[in-house]
Amino acid sequence: MDAGAEETILPALWGQDTFVAKAGGSEILGQMWAFPDRKGRACCLIPEATALFQERSQMFLNGRREAGFFYAARCYRYERPQAGRYREFTQLGYEYLGPDPAAAFERSLTLCRDFLDSLGLRYELDSMAKRGLSYYLGGEGFEARVPELGAQKQIAGGGAYREGACFGIGLERLALALEAQGIQP
Image (cartoon, rainbow, N blue to C red):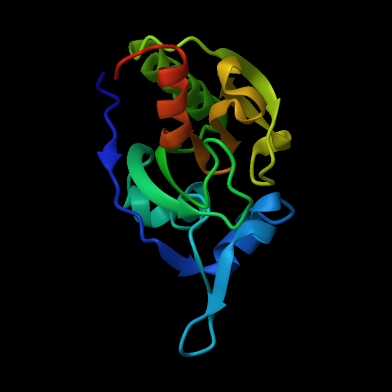
């Protein structure tokens, strides 16, 4: 599957201000591994990636009107580990930056669905999910859920934001979902 996206390598360490500004009001702020650097600046291990794309959208676009990007990033959240929900996890993500968030949303949703379908995974899609991140327009987005995973059944989620739209897939949860459905990757 060719998404026409550029690979992006994201840093593991970033300034807390980005996540406070972009994900403010969400549960992520209470789950950040946060600490001051040697100069006393507030830093954190990245809890997710979309806030970085929002903050640096013009840098990523580099004069272009729109563009797609993909990444596999290690992310960190200080929470109680559960099946498929770990303090350190890998997020496979796609970000489409451009002037039309609604079109970017449709593109992201279609690409996420196509990817999951290509694996043969059976999942439920909620295209009007209430998302826990304040940067999603209207607080809504989409989620893909695999019921066999129980309480932690969400494997992918995304939505539109002012600069574009995205989705992220938790690779550890995806592996558990494939195993639960007897699918060999």
